[in-house]
Length: 270
Image (cartoon, rainbow, N blue to C red; front, side):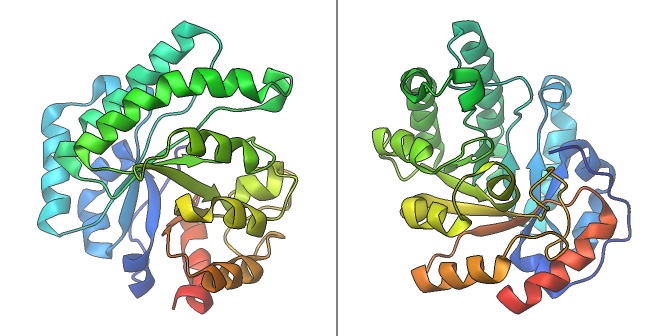
């Protein structure tokens, strides 16, 4: 997820009030009035740099404005260079520190959920899922305890994982309602060996959120829905069949992609 460049005015769409839209915190702060006026519901992304330089007055100003308007938000934790399942203890330490910084903001913002990357990549781990899982448990167990205390669910987003079994094993080991799964449709189409419906079938009971963006299976383009080759009709039909109602989040990388994505979503959520 790159830091997208939104600029006002945002499109006025009733559907905006039914989905979250990915928005980096600096952009949210800069365009707070426009965001509030539009009805856009942010999934606020905090990079490591932002967390280190976040002024308390800016955080308080933003959270107060969102809560006064009763705008539901979600969080997206930092992910660049981080890995909660790293074999290197120091990498796990900084990862835990970054995730902890995000959890520190929960009492101020009261997000519906926090999305985090689990960090598995078979090319780096030489298919050794056990190694990644063993180290992941060291990271997630204390973080889940914090999430439970703060009453905020955390959702692990598939990135390079090629099949749902990898995340299923981790979620089975930590059987908590405060640790679940975020299906990223674009990542699934690009990196996974199995259809998106199989991810829902295997992890459906732990599904908390879905990231909606499209691609052609060649690059993480973050295109509007319908402009790539992802079969969203099949995915939404399967979700309806399973009676799953996750948080829906759009991840556009430019403002021009927001309106087409909302238009495409109308036939599924309208």
